[in-house]
Amino acid sequence: MLSSELKIFSGNANRPLAQKIADYVGVRLGDAVVTSFPDQETFVKINENIRGRDVFIVQPTSPPANQHLMELLIMIDACRRASAMRITAVIPFFGYARQDRKDQPRVPITAKLVANLITAAGANRVITMDLHAQQIMGFFDIPVDHLYAAPVIYRYIRQKNLEDLVVVSPDIGGVKMVHAYANMFHAPLAIVAKKRRGADETEVLNVVGDVRGKNVLMVDDLTETGGTLVRAAETLKKRGAKKVYAAVSHAVLTPSAVERLRKSELEELVTTDSVLHPRFNKFKFTALSVAPLLGEAIQRIHNAESVSSLFDINGVRPES
Image 1: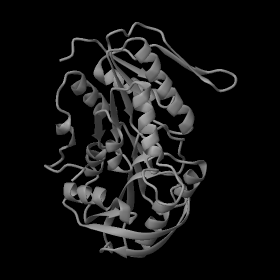
Image 2 (image 1 turned 135 degrees about the horizontal axis):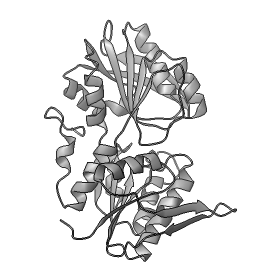
Image 3 (image 1 turned 90 degrees about the vertical axis):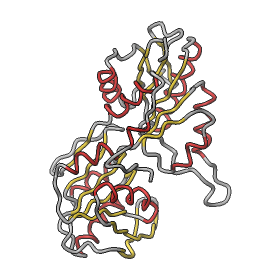
Image 4 (image 1 turned 180 degrees about the horizontal axis):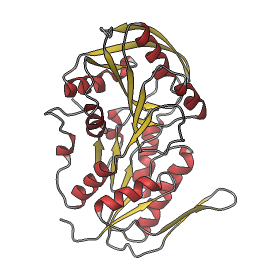
């Protein structure tokens, strides 16, 4: 166990989640000013002594992504210059994760750039959840604890006692995650094959697997416009599915996505509070808190204990 005191601070990206984490851990949320000058430069001041402390900074890079990323970097720098013993960046939603490779000429690998910035700012460790691409862990030269929302989502869906359940991937890229969920629920899986026409427009090509007369749970790591989920749900209903639910780790929803989801065939969208969400009317939207998950990880890291047992569900690990 570390002899230093544990401190939790928050930027402006998701203070409610940071407060819940602090409440779970049993500490007071740290006193820090995180604001902007008139020209939008970010200013940070830590208003308490953190010399020799074990500091955790909770800050997803949710919209506006650049502003919240800069807040995180400047908070890390402020803590480093205030002689914190260890600084852990707690990033429930890691933005820029889709820019993890060169898939066309003359484009950056921005996920690697962001990893370098976080390390250069002075972070000693990173906690994150459901990365869009798991290889991003290797972009960091510091330890990364990659958590999964699956235990939280699994417990909620299990309570519904859905019969004849099929777990579906709304695109081919999410098959590995869906396979893990299918094993947890001891259910078959299916895949919706799609073709992307633009940033927010997709075309469903085919459904691989049997969904007729079944309750469907679509699983994905991220949705922004809702286009993939809505079109997949429409196709699954046409193929005879009874009810279609969606479980998404990070719902970074645009205003157009809210309206699109209201008109969709989805019975319910289940997500987490990794980012702040708009209010929904006339649509079943459930945001499950990952504060206990993140809080438990923070406590175990502070006490130099293993976090791997947090992943086990029915003997299955989400990354399997």
